[in-house]
Image 1 (cartoon, rainbow, N blue to C red):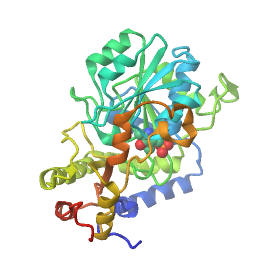
Image 2: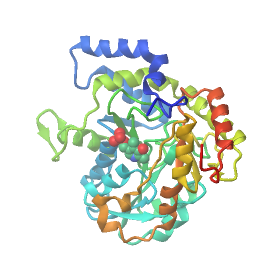
Image 3: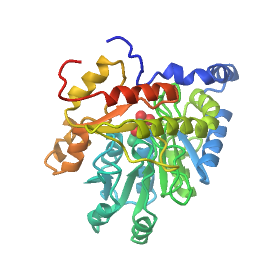
Length: 376
Ligand SMILES: *Cc1c(COP(=O)(O)O)cnc(C)c1O
């Protein structure tokens, strides 16, 4: 297929404003002779903790590892039973669930709120059992997913709250606190397509709990709390200083980049008006538009139409975790809201390299779509 006129995401283009400084940062690491840990990693951790508003931050290898390490650390600390149930949204990226099952924990899937596509907190309360050890809130598509009063109720019952903040860096809860500082611990991903993207894999854990931060740091470094002293059987999940150096360049621009995403989303919300296309809920500071996700019946027809008009698109996600071949043990679950979302979602271009003009033209293209017109 030829490159669409309005690409879904052009990573080289999104990095162009940072290009020179990224190259200088990488060169700095190359010349430093320090290739594991060091100053770039340390200052990245300080920068992210300050931005999010937590006491601690541990840079790690990627977002999945960040989540895996959080659960493993709570188990090692004796704060989570090794076979506990963990309530997870059924409508999420597979990594959220992999982190649970990888640790031998039991995922309990709950249906999302069909309006926000995020966790339904009342459904969470209904899913709590005496075996519930933790819940995971995923700020999906960049929308903060938090209910303070239900979170307080869960905490009083000794249930941990873990945030999967891979998609929502810079989003705020109603009280102004940033996602990544709301629960007991949070995982970040800096996969290149995320709102802050590295030039490879990278991730982080943020928390206000010193015991958790120390255990995550140890686990990510063979389980050692100091050199050649292993308190637990750990992994190698360290943050690469090349990625840290790149992230130190890009992190300060997050508010500006998120503002550009909001501008694009507001144009779509105001200008797309087509009875066949359902728009996402509007958002304020709670939403950083990692994805702009519409819903449509006859998705194949709609995406073929977008292809014919040069509009890039993607699907997040076509197959929910409980329908994946690796999770046949959950395939019997009845999750109709999640199945219906997976069948109908389409993501439109919303990166910082989508211009307001592009967005207006994409909106006009979408307004001209009709499922009855078979020939495009
Ligand atoms: C990207 C993502 C992850 C995994 O992050 P990686 O850095 O790719 O391992 C986890 N959860 C969600 C919701 C994500 O979008």
